Length: 342
Image (tube, rainbow, N blue to C red):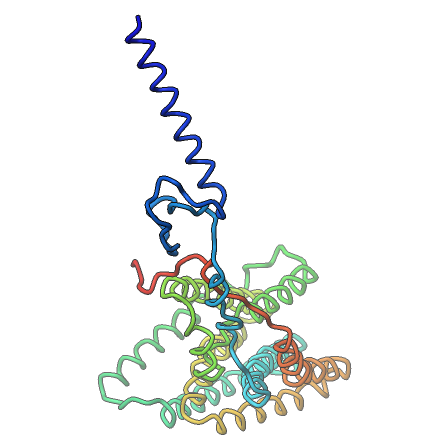
């Protein structure tokens, strides 16, 4: 009985000593009496509490590693305006295709003329690729391109009767509203990185971890696919309102040449020369203005407003808001992997 009472008293004394030590640890100003000498505090992640310091203790060097605006990309007005011209050129492409759609629906553009226009656009695009692409054209490469294009044109021609009767039971008002909505989705989801300077894209991604770069690339690919599908569906909706199969084929071919093949041409021109891309984009914008003006004065003014907003107002806003960009990084941030787990 006495032995059990002794063990109990010893246990109580040990618990009291541990509690006293814990109270000492909670006060960073209290030196631990159990330590022979006060050790210097070290910034470690694991290893338990350090003797004489609280678990949340921090010394005066805590803010020395703070970095401000480490990931902010410095932009200049000229580069932003040049990149915005690429966006304006794609808006011009959509406006150009919509103008041709309007003339075709009004009967002002015969199917034979539209077919000749398709052939002219295709020839000009092939010549642009031939002069700007950075690879050697070999005979197998040309044969492969010709085969793929033949399959592409044949598929459109075979499906033209299906496209013509696809929306016969849908009202015209629903078709116009859905087409406009799809074109807006196409513009907002389009991948504009091919029309901007490579240095801007590289600078915006240079500070990101590899896993974050991969997720951004996957997100960009998904949005680009949504944009492409929206443009194709919009073309099908408009083509379904035309009277003949040949007319449907000609309009579908024209639309897909601009929506699918034209971005490749502009990308190759941009890679070849920035000045050439600027000249080409400005020519396209003025050509689109010339087509819109006789069609509608309101659409002409609206198109000019959109182009000025994209090329002048938006770059000015972007440069101005850089002054208010404030980002803080320090030892409190979560660790970033320097390699890709995939």
